Image (tube, rainbow, N blue to C red):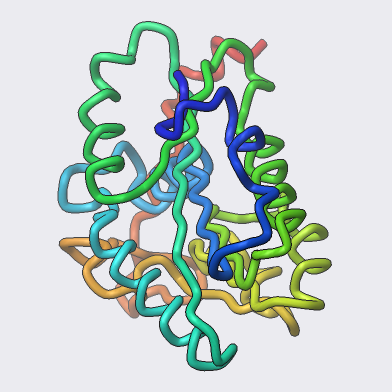
Length: 224
């Protein structure tokens, strides 16, 4: 699928133009966040537990406004969702993609042809090209654990504010980081319609709790 700007990949868009306002870039790792959310819920999310991107967009605009005050210049927010498209699922995914674009998000979609055809490298390339433009004033990476982005983000954090959005259960490295800011996705107002049913070994109720399997037991028959 061609991204909304008509180019073949985010890296080939007009990222090298140095004129214009500084950019606060948000990149959303859809496959990884889906896995992280699924592990918290113990299955596929229902409508109540699907992230609301209009709420995320409003948060990003507010975050960008705050950085504008700190930088004493007008900054512009930009957001892109990176996702994989499994063969035969495009009709199901298309309404979600169009809804994202209507909210104001760009979408980079890549076929999920093999287990290794994820979007991590595409996200890093996009961040790198935005940095090369000379306009990058802040980066927000939304990924359930974010480990794949740790070193590049640490380098960027030497010069600009860098924030990781994820789930605290899966991103301990970011929660405890000295130079990166971490925000739990559920802390962003309005992103979820209902509180996530988060139970971990650190916050068990006195009466105990069931921790559901992350995949069916029968999956062992297919993993030999």
